[in-house]
Image 1 (cartoon, helix red, strand yellow):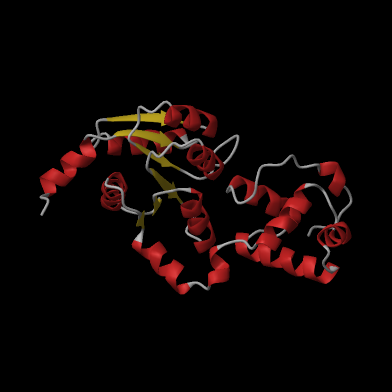
Image 2 (cartoon, one colour):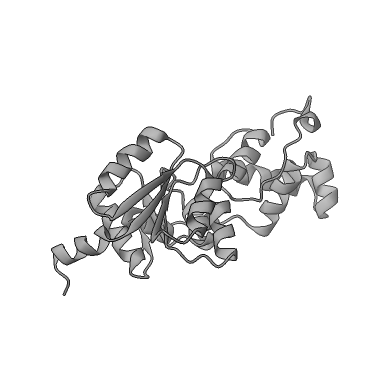
Length: 229
């Protein structure tokens, strides 16, 4: 049975890459992690995250989801496609089952809320560095209680968002996907409810910001004069 001291020593040897676009948050968290790790390197955008992780000189990545110019989930999918197996913990304010499940499916090894204690983050670091997965207990409870539909976007919902991101109107989306206008409207309302936004423009931006759909240029002119979705 590992002692408390041995568990701390295991975490202390890690070389951590920390990604957060909020500099004050990143610096405060780095100071906290420095007490338990060998080194902490801070980056503030997803491109720097990719480069640093692929360089191969880190043992653990801790990242927020919302990074620029693309989300941490996009970065994570790219890392996994390129064979990078460094453990990744997502540290986020988002606790919705949909977001947690998407992060784990993208290749995250752990998911911890920013509202959690430092002790919980240390537990997550120890778990994932040992090859295990870790999800905050309160998040795991919500995952188990939420209906399966709340865990993920369906293929059709992703299709609808992608069409919206291309600037297609409701009737055009219906024709493109071979479904009725009413079905498109139903999918769009479900998506608005899932992501907690109130317009089509906000829906597209939030889905891309969180890495739920591939990044795509948004043509604002295509929506000129359109009523909010």
